[in-house]
Image (cartoon, rainbow, N blue to C red):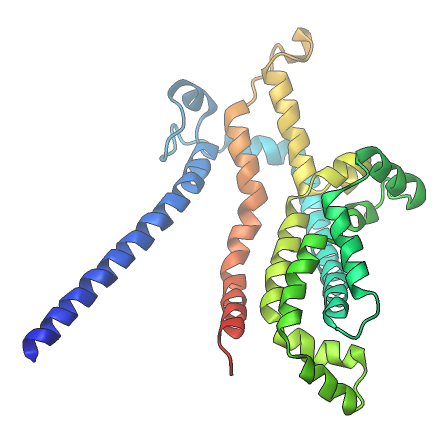
Length: 300
């Protein structure tokens, strides 16, 4: 009996050891590119150009960050504020609209729900193209040089709606019917029953919307001309484009003759400035993300 317990203990130990080793290896593999980006951003541009990228900083230097914040510090902070506000407002509005449409299409008593779902699905497969989309946004909705231009064009995703609808479809219709018998309206059912039972979907789709708004630069390129309204991604994209243009000689020789810019390290510094808040925010979000997964996985 003792022998069997010893063998079982030994087998469990090696399985756990292998699992921990595999997870540690994958974590290091995922962390390695991020560490390299951080290292290069604090390296001297000449050393990076000469020796290539390295995990450890080469000739440690903060010149790249000093260049970015010295020349555009105030504008970067303003762009941060714009991006944060757009992300919060856009995610909230997107979640309200997406969850309401998903909930409505999950109700089998809704008339023409299959036709509505077909029309929504049709827009995924076929689209009118960029020019009609731009014409409608600028001439009909007047989104040029307005914060609405950073929110409205991407406020609703059909794919996210169908993803959320699968969760709402899993809720037993008998719950809705019982609530209707008790006199609850569909809005009451939506707020009190559907949303609490679909926390996983709300969290997952909400994170997707939030990351989409945070990383978006396309809407700013299309609609925003006022530099004070540039979001972070587009503002840093402009800085990077200017640095690359000067470094590659695409500007007049006289204008760039005495300018030496950190063209290699600025790419990594821009990346760190962009993803920094997400990295620091993730540990706080992770708790709710895990809770949401457990809520959807454990059935009471």
